[in-house]
Image (cartoon, rainbow, N blue to C red; front, side, top):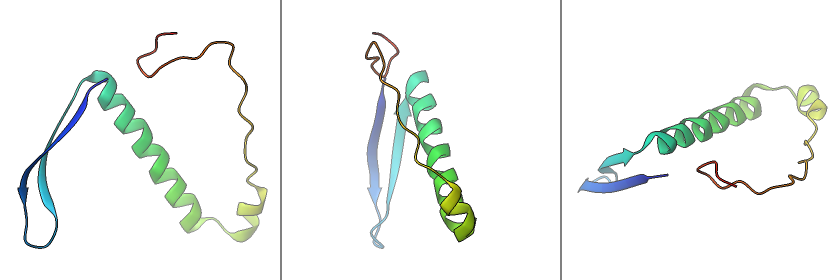
Length: 73
């Protein structure tokens, strides 16, 4: 997986212009994590207290094999 961020220009307001390059797996990972972050934000912002009480943390199942980010075992 390749995700590379290069700062092109630093702005006076503290922000920066950047160039981001990534491969197919990098793009997939960025989209997946971005969607998760947006959904978590929406849940915490718009869910009622009653709905939040109904949300239970899920237990992670133990995997028989560890898989790294590029899908290999």
